[in-house]
Image (cartoon, rainbow, N blue to C red; front, side):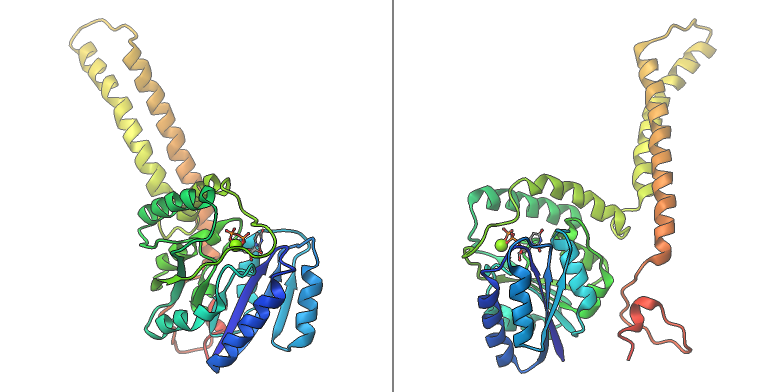
Length: 321
Ligand code: UDP
Ligand code: MG
C-alpha cells in the first residue's frame, strides 16, 4: 500500500518546511510506503528553492514546477497524473489543514469510501469568505445532488481510481466531490480541524464565487454525466416553440373561420419565440456534436475490468495488474 501526498503550492515558501516536518511525523507513524508530489504553481517567491532543498533531504520528495501560475486545479491534475500511490492525499500547503487527520481520513477509505473529503467545521477564515462559501456549498449541493457541506476543502483522500477518472482544469477542483460521485464513486465527508493561515496570503478572495457558479454549469455539461446538452437545450427550445405556436394556431383558426387578420402584439411575440426556439435547439445540437467528439476520449470508471484478450483502454491499463 502506497500513499501519494499531492501538495499544490503557490508562493508558500514559509509554510513548506513546517508542513514537510508534520507530514513526515504522521506518515512515518502510519507504516505505509509514501511519496510526496509538490506541485509549484508558478510561484514567484522562493518556493521552488525550498522544494529543491526538501528534495535533497528525502528521496520520497517529487517536485513539479509550472512556468506560470495555472491555478490550483491544474496543479492537482498534474499531481494526480504523477502520483504512483494506491491512495492519494491532497493537502493545502499553507498549514491550514492538519496532517494529523490523515489517519482519520484513512479509516473511512478502509470502511469502503472511494473519496473522503474534509469538512472545515470551525473554519478560520474571514466572514467575507465563509459566508459566500456557505451559499456556494448549499447551491452546489442542491444542484449536483451530492450531499456535502464543504466541497472546496483542499484536504482529501482519494483512491487512485478516483483521481484517474476525473480531469480538473481552471477552477473545477471545487467540484471534485461531484465529479467523483457522478462517476459512481462513494464520496464521504468527515469533520476536520482548520487553522488560521500562519504565513503568506490567501490566493482567493470572495470574488471567486461568481465564477464558481459558472463553473458549476460547466461541470454539469462537460462531464455529460449530469446534463446532456441536447436534452437540456432541447427542452427549453420545445417549451419556447410551443408557447410561440399557440397564438399562431389561435389566429389560424380565427382566420379559417372567415375573420380578417391584423398583426397583433401577441402574434409578434409568438414569432419571436419560435425563432428563438430554433436558435436554442441549434445551440443544443452544436453542443451535442462537440461532446460527441469529446466522448471518443472519454474515461470511464470501472468497478471490474477483467476481459479475455490483450486490449484494454489506455486509462485503465495502469491499474490492471
Ligand atoms: N494554490 C495554487 N495555485 C493557485 C492558488 C492557490 O496551487 O493559483 C494553492 C495554495 O498554495 C494552497 C492551496 O492552493 O496550498 C489553497 O490556496 P489558499 O490557501 O490561498 O486558499 P484558501 O485556503 O484561502 O481558500
Ligand atoms: Mg488556505
